[in-house]
Image (cartoon, rainbow, N blue to C red; front, side, top):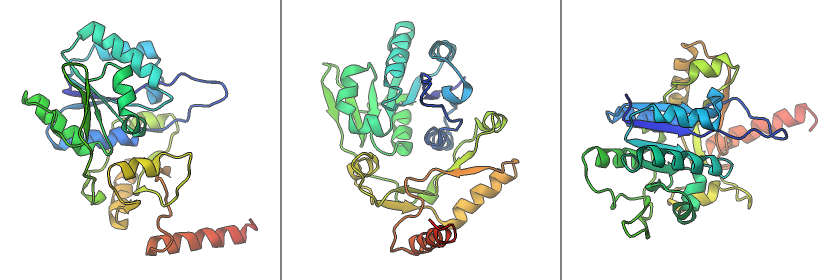
Length: 274
């Protein structure tokens, strides 16, 4: 039985917005770091599994985890609220429920008032969630964890500003690929993230706000060798289709990576008469 369940909640299908078959890379990274820390982790990717809301709730009720981490977006907010209510009615307070992602990070005060979760992991969650899991496992207080928002016993909301970010992305383990067989069976592409952040400042995008909130630079990249090693390991597992999910794959226009990437795009556009 797992100690921790990481959930990508189901999405209510809409005719005008097709659901793309893909994996949740954020949860995969969380699982890899938690496992390296000695925890048993189960990934529940409801959209990839094709699970409905009720199927997801039923499956969670059958597990005996003590920590549930949920990736929340504005699109899945209502489903997450229903899942949390169902689990609270079933198991009351013997599990700690935490959420994370861009939306919870930037709207933690709102979400803690609206959803009965215990905490919100702010910013990059890999090591913050690991620290939270260690504290809970050892029955230690978690109220001083950097980058954590939570409800006090009196119902008031407390907030520890996130001051750290992952400076070396190469230090992260490769994401846990538990869902790889299902993804390949459904014809999906394996996701790879070679960097984090973006140099753009689009008003409609949360990326800059998210990384600025945790004090991170606009752009960080893994080394080419580190990315290639990951690809080689996936090729050994018969993976042939990849999709890079970087916030901005090209990077800094003034860096070596950026200059080469932008020049390649320019040549491609010129050849195609764009």
